[in-house]
Length: 254
Image (cartoon, rainbow, N blue to C red; front, side, top):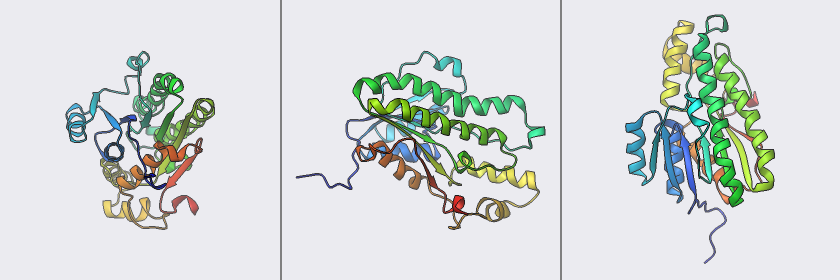
């Protein structure tokens, strides 16, 4: 029996998901595993990574990805690399702590570069690879008080496109997913931070800042991002590379 064209299978594929123990990363890890992939959960939280790995019959890698010097010699053998790990800090540029700014860019730009660098040789050997970078609407737009995050997301967009061009002759694609506000612990912290910066209540932050420009007035669910990531990881997306896919309820259409 022929497999229906709409069926997504990652059977036999190996995937590495960074920031994989919670939020978008956990949703992607579960979706990849459900499609048949063997998934390694990479996260700073060793206990949470181990628990999720056990749940999906995968593996876990407890690591601080901001320690980029330690990533320079790693050897990664996967078919799918999903760069998702990230943090957010909010402050005006003139008040932004320089070391925190550097930390965000190490974690969200330098670490993805080093993981790509480690994974690409094996992908090239096999003639197949999928690099998926969880960017943000802030990868194509900007916001006040988020200089480090916006800079990092813009940088990873460029990195992703470069990987797409270099990987094309070897069967490797590289794409970004650009969500608006997703219902995750990271966003919950942003709500509190924004409330503090603007001197307003948390409900006002959601309604007047986070969703004001979205046509669809709700937060995105992590599983909605995972659905797109699973398709991008599959054979069906072989001609999709160097792209940035918005999942933002129409935020960037305005």
